Length: 108
Length: 122
Image 1 (cartoon, each protein chain N blue to C red):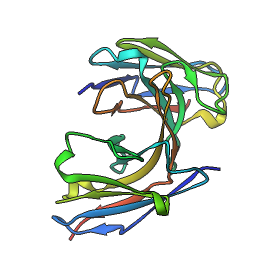
Image 2: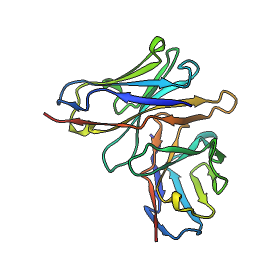
Image 3: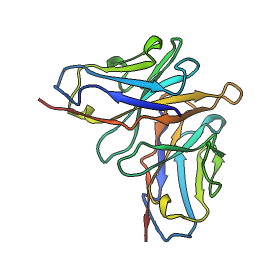
Image 4: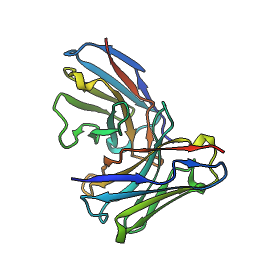
């Protein structure tokens, strides 16, 4: 099973700032089969990025994903008030699919 | 507009079977994979498994022997059964659609239900 480690656990930033979230798989994720989700309190997760760097339908271009192998990054170029949430990475390159433990982006 | 809605008992006794149904609207249940994912209160996400509409399944080995996912095409529903539950199975259970891109091999968990909290307690 591939274990995904996300860093940092919590990111305290102000609106307008840049957020950089990391996801480190314990083994190489084949074909960059890695996704990012956003989850707000009381809501289901929302798909942001798949294939490491492809934005899902309707996702603003301030969200971008990059990386391969054992090092992936989600970047939010300028935080909007609605972006403060918990973010999860997920790999689907090998079974079982696994999620990271999450990074909380909070208002500073 | 694709919508998924979970339904089923919110309270299950230890050692019994948890049963949930997800009703799909706005999309054909054909041509997609259908998945269950759970989240213990205040914790992270755990993938339970998926079933392709036409039959193939893939379950998380940590739950494999206790899980069954089925699809009822006539009702546009899919279901989860988790047997021999314990308090550790208390979680918000989400149903979700998985869109498989045959060209890239990408799986996209693109639509989710709102989730339903199932508590295991006597």
